[in-house]
Length: 620
Image 1 (cartoon, rainbow, N blue to C red):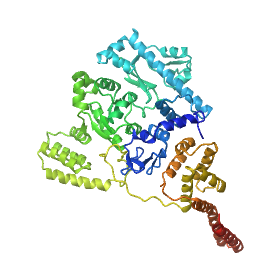
Image 2: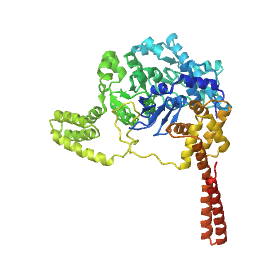
Image 3: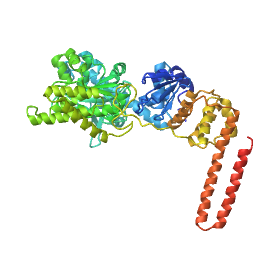
Image 4: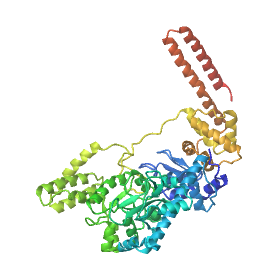
């Protein structure tokens, strides 16, 4: 159940230090509503706030997606941490000494030890390559190349840029001398096994090296740019136990403070773009690593920012990549804009040619809307000097504008088209109206569709209204079980009474499990503390169930009489189920013609019903 190497005292200290409202409030805009705090859920798409924080109980719960728990659980979910990672993160923030490994068994301890060893090797490798770049004759050509590209020594130090020499075994000798296991280093992506099985060689040779960090600033991979001619121009570490290029960004940990403060991210295509843009003042810039933007990338961004600016290369491939990235980012609820660059130029080249101030002023500070970009991109596909080209462009432009929900935005762009081509605004409006009718017929109904997301950080996001649905009506015994547990979670005496009279005989499996854990929790001498109890569960489903129960209205009546009635209601269920089972047996006997067996079963049913009635009539 628990990660026994994390002391209970540490978990309690972490929960005491991190108030649930402050913890959640760093990610979600919360508004006070009576004794609760409400906001739009950061974990799923919704228009009406269903995400609730209860300061008194130090828990959160979303009525829409069912996620719930305490401060530790929230950090687990929002940062995609394991329980030990979340505790470690919160403990470090609180200045609580981290002296445990936080693992459950020998196998996972070995896995963690291997991961830590690979990270250590990457950290040392990055330092080695940086030293070779800055302090050796081997690295001089690479250093001169970087300086010729306008990269300063300060930037080289900040981004730990390095150089891998052309020899086949520089890193092999370096790591083996420090007693790193060569096989593990191969699995970690630093070395490559020779085909004849006789040993290992360096993965990166004669390349300018860029360390890739995880969100905590630990080196988990490397990227190398070829210094001379040849292919591939860029070579990344392979997928490893540490590195997944579809879930990591270059420079994410450096840019995180700025992106969190501004709620905005600037997306580039290359490492040099990020580095040069950083020198221009773009401290919230990141880049993907040899892969197109993925849903995983977008999900990571949506937990940190509200807006994304795409600053890709100005060539056809870069602009096509922008077009593909827009729906991926919009799908997770981000407001998207595009920083336009002259045709054929990338951000690095633009800064080199026009300077940092012009880059900030002309591109980053004045991006265009998605619609404007789509219109510009569409225009390139038509010969506007010809009448046919103009007509086809106008029809495509109207289709683009028709996708906008705002009548004001539609009119704004239609007027632009009308002025630019001296074409009737009324005709454009009529075509736009027809296109919108077609779109409405094709549009899926309800919230949570593939093109709509709202995590509550921006009110202007394009989304559909969630179809309203009444909460399901629970059977009486389930209501009884939930209300008993709600009281037991907050009162030891109630828990003791239920333990003596009912034990773990709850009819819902999760309720029975919660009761068992709660009895054990109180048996250890703990006082009622719902946040601490949830931390002890270490089971995602049970944590959600407990949070859901605790979010029930506290105003429902509860006294000794109701406690008795709830227990009786719960105890009736197995009898009812047995009677129903007997009735099914009787029907099968009748259908098979065995009337004697059917009569015998009927007698058993009558006896069971009398017992049940007797139990209902008895005083508890």
